Amino acid sequence: MKKILQYLFEHKTLSRQQAKEIIINMSAAQYNDAELAAFITIFLMRSITIEELSGFSDALLELSVKVNFTGGKLLDIVGTGGDGKNSFNISTLACFIVAGAGQKVTKHGNYGASTISGSSNVMEQIGYTFKNDNNALQKELDIANICFLHAPLFHPALKIVGPIRKNLGVRTFFNMLGPMVNPAKPDFQLVGVYNVEMARIYNYLLQEKGKAFTIIHSLDGYDEISLTNDTKVISNNGEKIMTPHQLGKLVVSPNEIHGGNTVEESASIFLRIIKGEGTKAQNAVVLANAAMALYCTGTYENYETAFQAAVFSLESGKAYEGLKKLIALQ
Image (cartoon, rainbow, N blue to C red; front, side):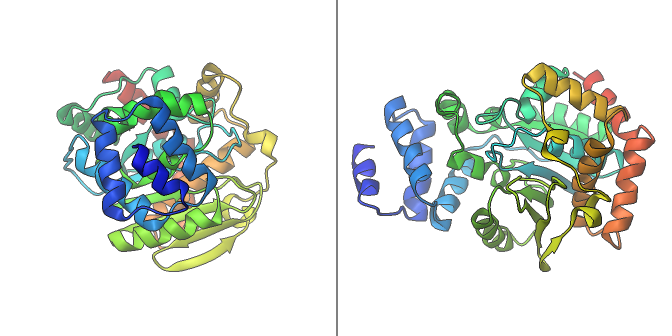
């Protein structure tokens, strides 16, 4: 690692193969914590290249615990995290609304490294047991239309760097990798990113994979549709700017989508919203993200019909039914 660090300190970048080999060695515990922290910090001081991000994701997918699901096309909604906004668990809630609308969801997530409550924190708090057993996860998909893939159980390297990321407490390139390495390899992806540069990188990488995708970036820095500002929307068909009124029928303020100060608070907010007891602002934000994900599948003729499907899933209790079925299987 010392040679690698020296190479990078000279403002050089890694090839795709070099980046892949580093993650493979990392997962084999060949580097100590100080070396790993130094390596991670380099990518906080300069932009990551497409070659480097591709190499890192190649390695994680190659090393990952493999899963193979049947029964229909799969979708994931995932933000890169690291936007520093501490909003509630919008993408995880949107996943349950999408599942309630009939779309199979394989949600990939992790503990929050730079936020109070990541998707794994809230799922664990509400009674979900993490697992990487294909049959058990398939059963969840069959019965509840959704299963949760806790990243460290599928990616050995993530387990090793978890404590270092938590101690650093800032956004790292591992945030960028999350959406690229879902072991279920979903057919559709809604990816939230925290800046325009990351949107550009993801657009390139996802175009390369040839799957249906939508990238969203709120222009005031959220890695999801926040309705606090306009949202840049990039898909296979190009890009556009959409207003809060187009996406969720109203404009909300940042304090209205705050995620609480503890994991317990975050879980409480999560449960209130999925039970249909959320505020107008909370519901609007979740519905906008769920609608964009549903629209990404190509099943709906336009965004508005996808939005109405999301509204029905939440207001009819279908989304909450899915959660209850999922937790009953634990």
